[in-house]
Length: 328
Image 1 (cartoon, rainbow, N blue to C red):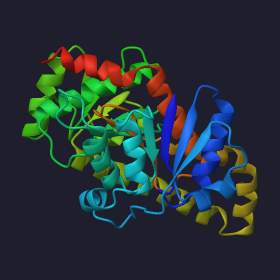
Image 2: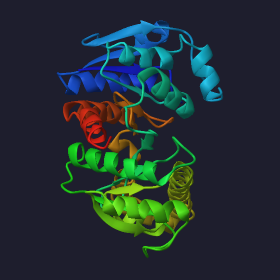
Image 3: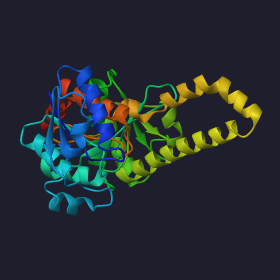
Image 4: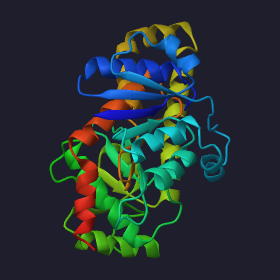
C-alpha cells in the first residue's frame, strides 16, 4: 500500500517526519511512502531509500495561513500535492501534521467526500485511565451539526472502533450535560433518539467528567463542543504534569521521592500519551486522511502511519461507503 506524507507540516518537520517514515518502512514490508516537501531538507535525513520516494516542492502551507485561501492559492504546497497523490490514485492514504483547517479543506475538496455522508468528522483516539482509550468525534471539522450528522458520526465511529481497534460491539455514548435521556439542548435530544433507533450499541448520554474513565468506546458530539472538550483535556493534563513536576522538585526530600516514583511516573505518562494511538482520522472522505498532532515526534508519526495502514488493511473506507449506500 502507498502512503503520501506532508513532510513539511508540523513543528518538527521534516526531521521527525522522516524519522517516523524510516521506522515505518523498516517495521512494515507491505508499505511504501512518498514524502512531499523540500528535497534539499529531506534527502540528507534519509538513511535508506528503500520504499521511500520524494516529491519536491518548496511551497508550504503555514500554521498561520487561512485554510481555504491557502489550499486554493498554494496549489504546489506539500499538503495539496500530498492530497493530489491520493485523489489521482498514486497513493492510498495520506498524513499531515500541518495546518488542521487546511488539511480538512484539502481532504474535502481534493480527496473528496463519500456520497451519503453529509459532514466529515475529525476523530482522534484519546487515552483513558485503564489504557483502552476512546474514539472522540467530531473535534472540530464542523462547528455546527444537525442530529443526522451525529448519527453518521456514531455509525462511522462504531465501524472504526470494531475494524481498527478490534472492539466487538463498541459502546457508543453521546456527550451531554447529564446522563438522563431528556437532558441537553435540541441537538442532543434529537440526536439521542436517532442513535437509539439505529442498529448500534448505544449506551445513552455520557458526561465529560466520565470520559477518561472509559465510559464508552466511541463518544459523539458536535465539532464545537468536541474541540473545547479536547483542548480542556489536553490543557488539564499538561497542567497536572507541570504541577507534579514542580512539587517533586521543590525540595531535597521531594526530589528523593521523585527518584523512587520515577518508573511509575514514566509509565503514567506513557499511558496518557496520545501519540501511541496515531493521529485524528478525517472520517467521511473517499480515502484515509490522517491529521497528526502539530508537535508530532518520530514516534507519533510512526503510529500515524501504522494507523493509516490498519485503516487500509481493514477496508474501513469501503465499509463506510457500503454503510451509507444502504441508507440512501
